[in-house]
Image 1 (tube, rainbow, N blue to C red):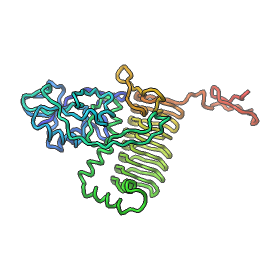
Image 2: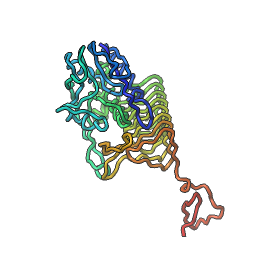
Image 3: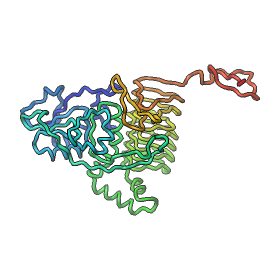
Image 4: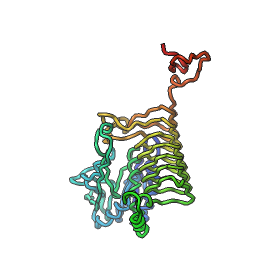
Length: 402
């Protein structure tokens, strides 16, 4: 059977990249689609418009900005039973409720509808009925500081049945973060003996709870990886040539090839692109960075970072709006992102200097360079300073306090 992938024309601001070329979990979306279809013996055919899709044969139809997982496609192929069908997930699932913002989902009864159709010869999309896949999720309630976030817990669905209409940087961020758990499910399904050996090794351990022991052995390393003996790696994928320094922590992360993580850095639940650099003592939580990013942050979370972007120490993306919703730009308007915690998006080739603050949900255009206010930087030092007095910085020089 052939799969017709229609050009959506969707571009992701602020990057300007076509959605199909954006990395999801470190892999371009168009490659994810092609590899997945071929895995099920389907032939992907890319067309410029819906009108170019032939109707005289049984076929699957989707758009080039639709991300879905192996488990979703497998269940959809098994359940549509040759009838005109459209992919559906339970509208009341935690996943749909948690990640539906800006996806423009259609809802029909209990079904949230996504842009993947199975059509027999002669049928068209309007003939399709919802085909709800087999869906399972485990909902975690992760404690968060309530007076800062406005909630006692962060609700997270653990599932590998994930679908996104990728039309906003928020979706690139969310789908990439979910790709960590998706990749682990696929890894265990593909290598069951290896997965069983991890459980056995963790069971035979003697330090800490079982889950901590399992995390310590459940890692995938590429060739030439250099991990310092004092570093801690848990539940992570490290690409070829990755270097991890002393006392660093890498937990639940995907680290691209030839990335350097310096001493005492903490990279948790994040996807870091190839040839990136994480400086010493940086704290990254829930970060997605494209290739060649330079992350020298003392603390950031829930941010998307473009290619070759440099964020220096003490550049600070804020991620909460106390008592107010976080809004993101959608075209010419700002809309509620539906999230209590969200950082910023930094375009390709941007630079942020020290003491630069970025508001929650903001997006910085490609090539933007932001530095501290020069009037707050000491550039002129009078030669007759009195050590018995106190001074402040005004207009770049030291002025005594009267």
